[in-house]
Image (cartoon, rainbow, N blue to C red; front, side):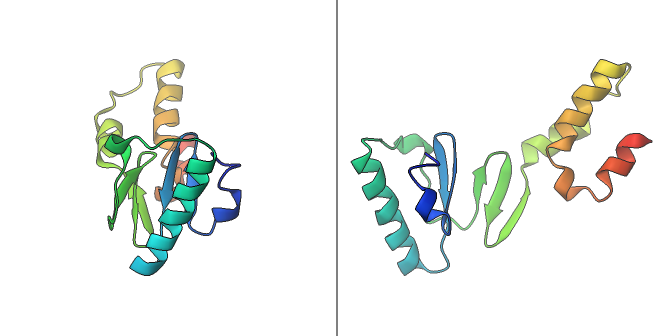
Length: 116
């Protein structure tokens, strides 16, 4: 998918078989969708309607809520971090740091906190 959409990086973010398409105006969005659809049809790729969301201000994408120039962590992941049991050994600490580390961009001084 990434190679197929390499010239669409100004308005499309592919990840494996998913793609998020974003635009500043409705007119641009329609053009961007048409361009992606033509590329997919040419490559004989198909959309899965149950995974498609159109004309949304915010969408869930790769564990984040994205839209209107913003990105924030998804609620389920926040809840998983909050409810993670207190680690009792190195393996559990590594597991927690892996889970929390996915959202390190939202946690100021994450690497410093992890050393405490």
